[in-house]
Image 1: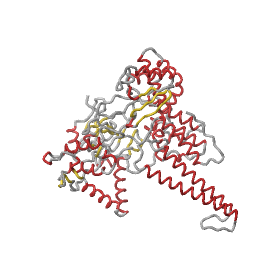
Image 2: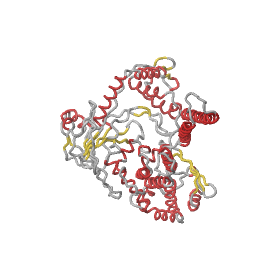
Image 3: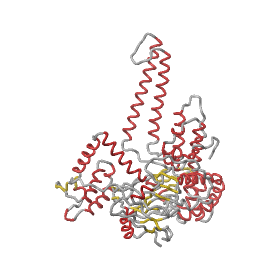
Image 4: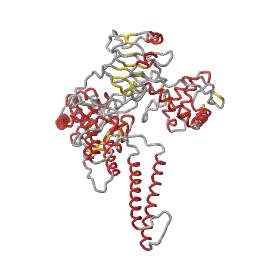
Length: 612
């Protein structure tokens, strides 16, 4: 069953402007479609201007609406933008002190490395080894290069720095003109028409080539990311809609499909990098389809809340079962519920050693006294999960049973896998998954934390926002949402601490001045209040400024490796935040940035009495 147009015919048809047939995604090729020619672009209802989008009726979904497989009936878009091809600069690195003359392909790769030099990234052994292997493979053997250590990239580094300085020193008008030209190019791809409605597209350009970084200690970090060409891209359009024009001369799409069950407009894969995942071109977060998905997602979490006691009773019963497999199913579900773990899928040897619940090994767990266990493993994006947790006595006893007589590298749950666990979850509740558990636990934790707030007469908006952030932080800790500590964290912290010292000094000066005024009211000091009342006002203001800086310092330290935004974007039901802000007179922009306010537009009219 073919789901694509033959590349050779599509290439010639595309260049000649002939009509062609496109796959419907089910093997049926009976529908004719035409490409977007220059004339078509004038007729297309996708415009480059930011027209207002009619919002009424966009979000009239119920939480328990059926999640239909068919996502749309008609879809029209302009495809995707490609980065410009590389322009050689002609600057050669040095090999053992002599210029190493490179062709454009080799030079581009050398420039990738030169751009990254001077960072911690290029000092990592895995990164250096991977890049060395990739770079030496594209060099000619007669060049005699055996090691990356023998190459001096400094000439290219200096060229990059010089070019960057020249670009930064350009006239303001030239920079503005460049921004406007880029915005105009992006605008052509920024909108699509789906079921007759204009929607924003989230990604308008494929990823540029470069060096793969990954997250955490990824084993492929340092390998090359190939240039994505139209031949790598599959586009998804409506059967009777125009096929987007490929704007790269001499190239054609890999395939054109009609798959109304998918919400992506295009997909591509780096064919040159082994184990590279498929990337997708999606609609913007505030689109109708994305909003509906969010409503359904939080609806499932709310439904789980209604059934949670029954579900917990079931997995606790299984956890106590004499059947090892049943006990493992129950215990795994318990850990997913309690710790917001992911299910965990099997990994190949050359993928990052990240694990979830089902792929936990004996070496990842230490059994402690008093019904406690310590878990230590790399989770999603190679972020470390390291916690000592008190668990239910049944869970503690079951885990002791699972690790008995096993070697460190053996699986903790050796009788179940991700597929079986997912089957069991759906037996408990239709569409139940580890993600639904995580969404439920994130949402209920946020609601419980926010419910502890007791407004005091002196509480201003800033204090309320601090309380909200602390509640958000508890959710982030639960979900193990971490971020890498910034390289310049100490510098950032020192700047904040210096500001705090200044605020404390200012407050102390004001307090001393007030005492002196009480002794002698004729005292006059430059830039100091002249009366006791004025001193009180200034001291009050200085105290608030000092408290603000104190909070910034403590927040910086507490959240240095905690990502607050992940749970806010993906897991906490936004209605909890919106109703709390409304009830406590906190402007929503204090907790939701502009992109989130757009993404969660469907929430903004929520009733004050709503509860998760």
